[in-house]
Length: 207
Image 1 (cartoon, one colour):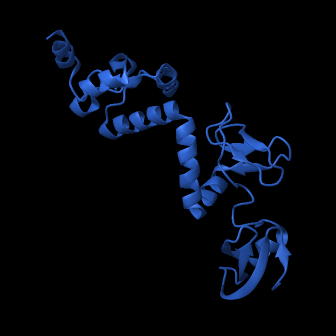
Image 2 (spheres, helix red, strand yellow):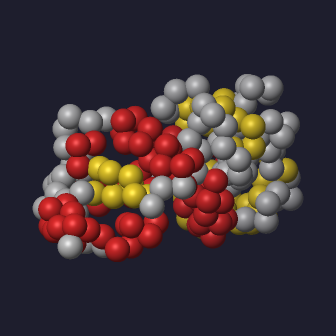
Image 3 (cartoon, one colour):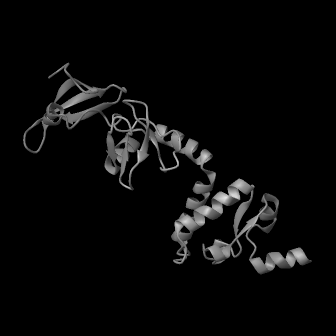
């Protein structure tokens, strides 16, 4: 098998170690330049086709129907999420599941960091909402009456209006991450309020 090509993988070397069933393991190089170890039986039956880049190439643009769209490396079409677990290419019908995405992310951390930065820049409202919800959940101050969609609408509106979403009673002072505890402020007003409680801030405005 040395020198043979299986989909995107070229076999370089047979390793001395074996699988639990005494099957052979090979060191291969992928079309993208990544070296990986593969079971010989998986190469022959087509279960292993690449280092992971066959399933995911890049996370680039944002489609209205997906949180993390990808571009199909085979046909170039943007992959649209069909449900919470899968992404499907609309043209060549390739399907990527959650585990495949995790493998690609682990093997390409620098590229993932770069692409996440692009997504964060293009989706500032969604990023801010997610970050605020994470901080509140970590402190145990996330309310149970509001959904993520409720928060997303508030943060999206604030982004379009050029406003900041502020907790009237800050999380650092025990306030809840709840719709009833949110207000929209201009960037200047939000900087002046800082981490003051609502009553304290209103009193400073009156004075």
